[in-house]
Length: 444
Ligand code: PMP
Image 1 (cartoon, rainbow, N blue to C red):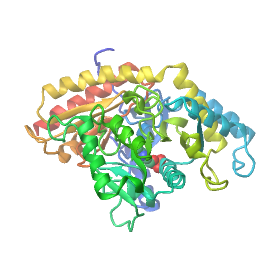
Image 2: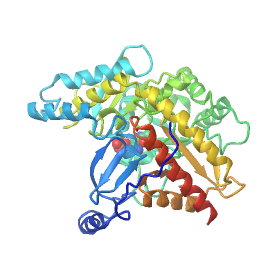
Image 3: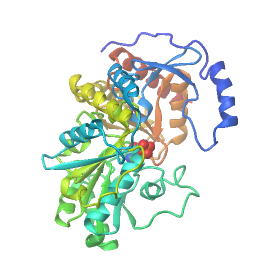
Image 4: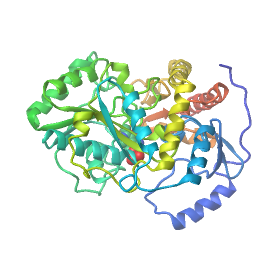
């Protein structure tokens, strides 16, 4: 990879005048509860860039929250969608089926971890997939309880709000929430007692389940193998393995929410693979379909088939346009080895972020896998979260035309989710902007 040369990609301040005019229309028309991280309105995308309506080229280190991994637009996805909208746009698979839905399920069954018999069902959004995984797990086991973790994020619908940990902004005054959801401690190496191993952290969680819920009442343990919105928390080695073993010993289903981690994002097709764990059920969405809305539950055929006919579905689930987009995106991931690309992004960016952490005392932790990387900001010389600095660093990146996202229970994490096809020079340029922003804001 190259060292940075300054390229002037900005024609106006961010957001520019045309975006500001649109922002004012938006404020009049769009509900205030729907936010935007960087209010520059996008005109088109190109190879790791988002070009806004003022002609500014923004470097995309967010991929629309881990969605446009294969490019935006990706030529193969665009072609597949174009062809499909000319054929038919919708029938409802529950009314008259079509091959593309079946083909996506075949891909999911083949690509997800484990060589046991698997089946899939398709939905529209991540939250809907998680809801359905819980429905399936409860139905298949005949048990009510679902176990989730501190810092977890699983969506914004009523059940998934209950599964999500963080109150603001996701849950505040939106209750009452669905019942039989039990929260246990996550393995969070940066914040756990020093030296706590993965198996010890798992024991802390499973003993809590046994004391407070009873293993025999638990349908499923639901976990993000690497947490997304909660702060890109990578559990200690052995944590997932020990949880999986406990689940197997207690006839509890292990459900991996791979909505953010799946489809090559972490340097493998699925993040559970890094720990050699085979979940009973897996939820996917985001990166699967190159920007079209599609989600899935994939899992053990006996579990998936436990539900009575007609018990699962929805008008749009597995829509043919989204399905062909997924087939094209998956094909691109395979042919361009985007898992390998994610691993190369990790090698390059982690070295840069670690070097940055060496020269400032506001970075407590650099972590992540593949192209899912994060920096956790703290007050100098402590582990105390610094959300204010984090917001200032993000804002400085945005002003400089780099799309970065924040996350974390304490709002003190900047996360990087570049498209897996991002050109090396652009990643280099985006990281240089982040480095400058951190050093300048830390000095204030
Ligand atoms: N689970 C995880 C791990 C996620 O990251 C997300 C989205 N950020 C969801 C579920 C919810 O997905 P959606 O926004 O498509 O409903």
